[in-house]
Length: 322
Image (cartoon, rainbow, N blue to C red; front, side, top):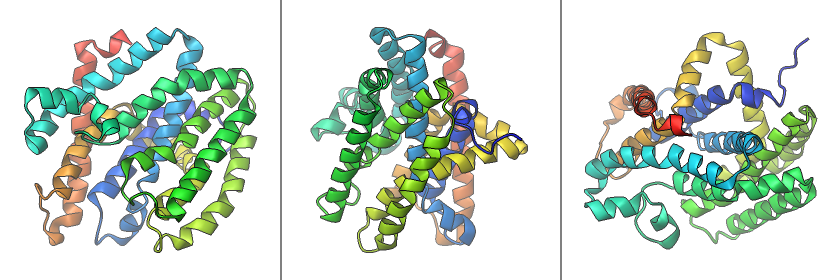
């Protein structure tokens, strides 16, 4: 009998997992208000970023395994991110920021995010930094320094907990959003190592069992300390991965849809970020009576535009340079 989940499923259903993640994130950003079951699920859509981080770490491990040349690796990552980032950034700057050329170039360089200057969103600057360190994490894993990796991950989670518990960081501090997700990225690379060695899912399931008590301890207090809402769900990440993999594996009519969005997840994420920023800043005002209908519409429009932009970039030949 085939197992419900195998660690190699992360690779097999990579696009579908990323499709689930981006849809979940859009459900959060655009927010259901009257459709109660969807509204309950949507409010935890920030956990979709955890899925992105794990799947990215998983994919980068095998990318480096296939070709460990650093310059080739970095060139491929830069070509995957920045042409898309600057292209969609044109629309963001015109609609949201009214940037001049130099400001536009600076905003999407990601430098501003780390220096207190202008930036658009937090995810791309964060993933670029993780790309930078990925080869060194891969080397640690290959050298079987997993104990050090575990210690580092625990230390990062411990620091994150301290910052949250003492309310040292602002509830919406974007740099914190990266900090507590670094262990997730490391776990993704470690899962790839397990898949390569055909170790199976036993360690993945052990992490889930170890994480449940931490979730149970932290989550009930998320109304008292806002960031517990984000931080606590990190410990349920294996459950989300297993659940969405099962969705892709056994609900076949959704598979092609999720895979299409997943392959265009970067483009879809950036396009929905324009709508999200417009809503947050009041550029786009949605009447309460139409909120759920507009939410569904924005998810569909963002997805279709993301797929279209991905197709256009692919046809331009940029992705074939990777």
